[in-house]
Amino acid sequence: MTVEFIDYFWGDKNNGFDVLYHNMKFGSLATKELLDFFREKANIEEQNSRLMSKLVHKASTGTLNSTFAPIWTILRTSAEKLTALHLQMVQKITELIKDVTKYADELHKKHKNVKEEESPTLEAVQAMQTSTAALQKARDLYMAKVAELEKLRKDNASQKDIEKLETKIKKLQEDYKTLLDKHGPIKAEFERRMTQACKRFQEIEEGHLRQMREFLSTYLELLQNNHDMVGQVHSDFKRQFLDMTVDKLLEQFVLNKYTGLEKPGS
Image (tube, rainbow, N blue to C red; front, side, top):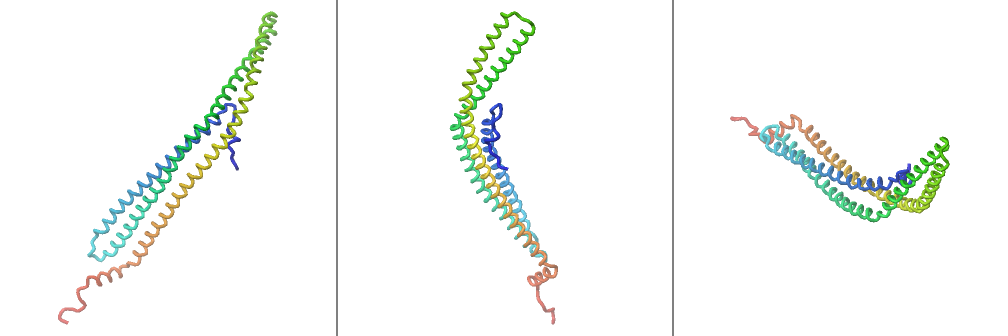
């Protein structure tokens, strides 16, 4: 389904421009919220890096003279790699934050220009709303007087009262026609400017959504790459651990610590 703003933002109250303008402003808010999200993610990754550093320290201070020492080496190496990956993630998200911040500044300037350039459209909308309200008020007053005239006739009121009311109704008809004549050009100008504004707001919104999706695509790619690299670290850790069997641990211990192959007195 292809959505065109020009088909959806009219209506009796002529509030389409207001809805589209404020929706554009919400784009700046969404950008700010996305920035806050990325900053929080960077903070989390930085905290994870610090926590992993503690594991590196813990693995480095394990008993290195025991038969379990090679396992401590594997644990330390794995923790060091994960620490580096978290720091790398912080750096990449920070670069993304710079890009989003730059976009947010550009978006703010664009919105400011739109506000200034669309001021004639806002004036046309307000004129349309005022004219429409005046027409409705005049029509309601005319209908009320017509109903009043019918009641007078039904109640056999005096001819003088009837003629007096008929004169008022004729004046109301003339006033309504005058308003209607003025309303035509106002309506035409309103429709012309609203048509242009709808197209402009749609272009802005489509560009904004494409850019926001691009930021998210970059973020998802960072997550996926980081996930793959973390998974590789865990796979390497598992492989190295499984290779380090009890026999191999004992073998490394005796090769590193053996005190001699001959018994005393041989």
